[in-house]
Image (cartoon, rainbow, N blue to C red; front, side):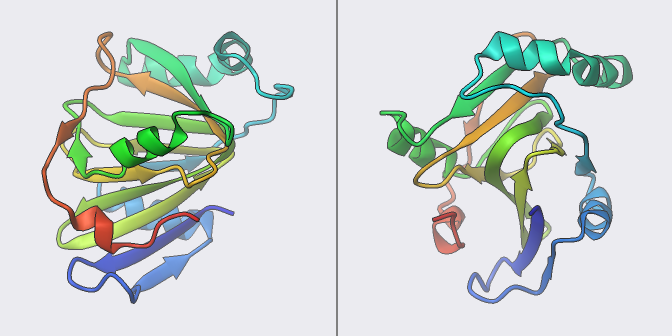
Length: 180
């Protein structure tokens, strides 16, 4: 179940707000300029689908975003618990960073935890199947896929060169809860 938990920048062990209600999550995030929507990930992808299968199944959803926002490229990221690079990839994404473009993800399987550092608060969004999130360019954040990652998400980009992380050097992410 999707969830949003908000912490202060100074208190990483006690949340100040929590909800699993999609409308309440959307309202909180939209107020901060973060797009959050529940879409329908309703296509049968089989077990461990390849990128072409995922793209073909959800091209209609991608096309809506392209028409609305002018995005130019997309791909698929898929992680499974047996990925031999899972620990290294998890560590990389757990470092706070920004992007020069929006970070748009549509989860079609599994889950991941986006953590946004906004106005002296930390917004932890547990994104699961059916969730679309768009983190605005320049927003400090990190992503936790957990120790046994299991998700597939479509990544949509402004720039055909794709996603480039600019690490902030802040170790704030180390203080906040992570996925098991």
